[in-house]
Length: 270
Image 1 (cartoon, rainbow, N blue to C red):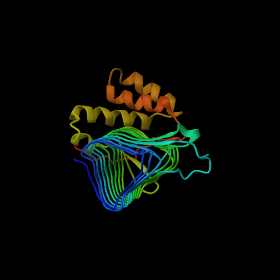
Image 2 (cartoon, rainbow, N blue to C red):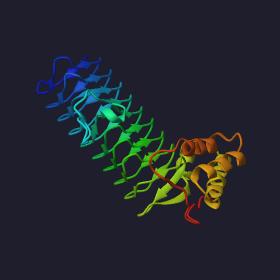
Image 3 (cartoon, rainbow, N blue to C red):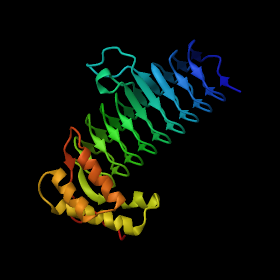
């Protein structure tokens, strides 16, 4: 049975699945679609063309689907799409896309978005991503699956974060971060492989050692990033994790890569 508090305002046209809970004083707009089993807390504002996947939880004072904070937005019917089984904590803001950015802001499945985080227009967030308190994503950022952005991390627009990477608290970056990398500091520095995170995701000791060697080779080589990546591909033929790094560099984007590893920073015993 749906449980919608009498004080909530659900506009005509909004589509709510089965077993949806809506708390007191929440406002849901007419173009919103909420999947089965979602729990929408009190004082939540969901507007625009917003789609929320099944079993996602939204906590008080979150604002989802408002128009983007972009001077280039022209009032189009852009979208916000949030996956299944996400947790969206208090005061999180997520905006719809822009006409020039693909029309859509997208968040994957099982993401945990903590208090006060902001997901700007046209961002693309993969599955199982963790954004800790007060993380700020500029427009058009891309976050790979299983990435972790610690408290108060700030990303410049168009920055890409590779899968399984971690950025330490209070870091800000205008550079792309490679998959599997551990980054922290101000200015941020590459500290080696995200060994702790990879162990938690059941990566083998051998895989972590291989990734460490790959990062060292990137660090030792000179020349443009894409030339270094091709030498990396030749040195680690057939290694799936290393090829993720290679493909990330091959794809490229609007930002430079953070490649240089701080000597001695990766102290894992793997």
